[in-house]
Image (spheres, rainbow, N blue to C red):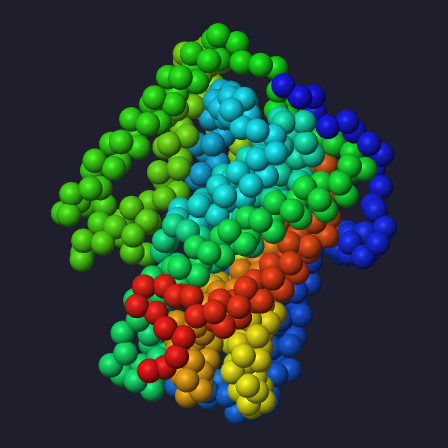
Length: 514
């Protein structure tokens, strides 16, 4: 087993990324930043509410109106829903429920022992691609990658004697930057397909689009993202981090010793219990009439009970093996130890909850104001008015999506706004809805990892602070910027080459219309 990385002197490297880090870290605390953004949205909504925009809201079919959030009724409504904004904010429940189970598994030593065992069978040079691949596969489990894979990336790298922030960066690149580079179908495929089909039916009411219309392209893209992420992590990010001191609480960092007999026995029984749980899940989900399926018998649709239960399943699939490991290995002696593990994990989330409260209020206000809708629709209208050649328009769609993604994080939310514009527009140029959707997915994924406005971005900052206490927004942005720029540029070229060669995009998909 390798030793942990040697602590160096803390200093921000020079160059462009060093400047990004210094400037970013001078920004206010994330909680304060979102308070400032909330006030900015209020004031901007008040100013723009007096203006008339020649834009049709595709959600209502009527002219878009910016809502004045400083009106008396808007303020009272905001105060009345402040609590539910926070308590119903999706990332809060996802993270806390999953962390309860993961906290037990970490407290008893199950996760630590499993990772050390994994390191014994994984070549050092393959750690980076392994972490990225796991991040990409995690897309099938909704937001599980943010609460499971990204922190484990740091643990794996630290246990292997490498810088933990590099592991977090690689995992974040796979989970979020490679969101549309999955070789395993997920719920996002039918979600985007439905919006694409609705946009296409504006011109052709009879058109039907396959949910896997981009599957071959996203599968091929996964190879590109894994290769790029591997190179950037090992050749750019980790060397740059060598001067960054690891100054986290030593008691909370992974242990370096080899597994003893008691740990090996506990790990064996814990893994057996996990496999039994998974086998039981498969057995109960396999029958066509399984209650895990939706009304039509589908198991992978967005509304299927099994897909809506992913976070709960993660909770159980770590809680049960964690308890089994603790009992067999002797790290827990009573039920009180299980509760202690859950409590410790919640203590670590205190700062995250404070940030999430203000993010939830900002997201609500931004959505109510219609400013995000205006930004997306005006950008799309400008792109349409330029009437550029088809290939240039495709590149324009990718870069516009990447820009809008910094402000409007939801993939389906953005596509719901843009699909009714882009899909028919490109159909009139002879470009299929399948190709337009592929272009959108490239732009949507590439900038996920550099926007502090994404709800999970502060959570990743918290993961980094476990190892480097001074980590801020600038630190994480500077780490992820090379991935974002490389993904955006190389992936755009990859899509155009894919188009020129004529490789199939997916099942029953085409490049041209009709």
